[in-house]
Length: 228
Image (tube, rainbow, N blue to C red; front, top):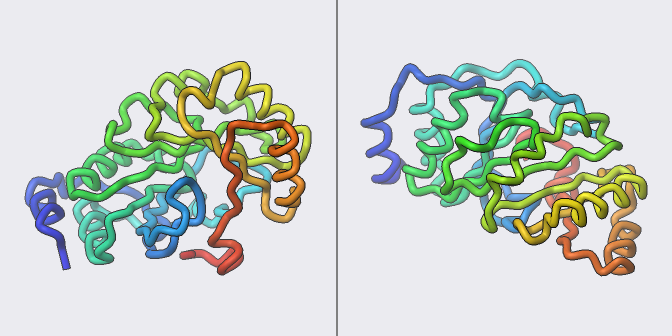
């Protein structure tokens, strides 16, 4: 059933605006401060990065074209407040900005998972931006757009995905150099199957880091299955 707010948006939507969508599914949020919350995930197709640990390579290609109207409609059918727009890299499609605003207008609490390689300046301020900072171990450290730090507020989050101790030390240096913990919450995640979570936990405690450690809940529950 559509919410009244979603219906109001649908009447005003530009039905010609489309996005390439890999999948839309309902699950528990597996990461960030929203972990465990029932959430609709809108996974857009395409990504200009090729991180070595990527677990959503199936979203690089394929998918189907959907109008923003249809996406908002399908999202409303799940009857949940929380929506995450992810990828791939969702901001690689320009119409993603319109989608984010449409979802906010439809009274959803919206988060955006982004690589940090795309300009964040035009993202609707109501959206919670979850921005990766790519480490050397990702193979894409040169893609970090450091100017994006200027567009983060305390409702946003910075995420480091760590392959090992070298990545950890590099991330510690970046926190200090850019005073990241004074901008917004900082998250540390171990690469699944590469860095033992308890080892990362020991390092964080040893060094008294001002970060939140997270483990991907969805992988503990369902492993690597798409749509989870």
